[in-house]
Image (cartoon, helix red, strand yellow):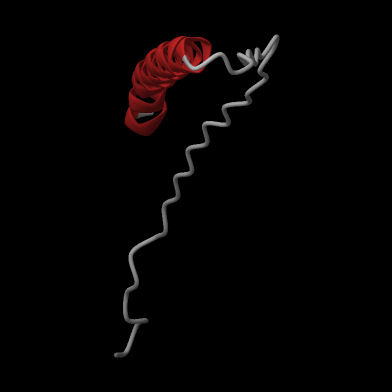
Length: 77
């Protein structure tokens, strides 16, 4: 039961980190693209814009647990 409880607490944290990481990466790429386009425009070269309209991700959280009986010597051993 403890493992299930811990997994339930960790999954939102992991998902939040992934979303924040995606947001940071997207912002970084857009900033670099803007700087590149400013340099291209300054040199009278064509500017370039790329956009991503949708990203789909699947998070799969699994927890397994098991228990085995203690091994004992039989009667007479």
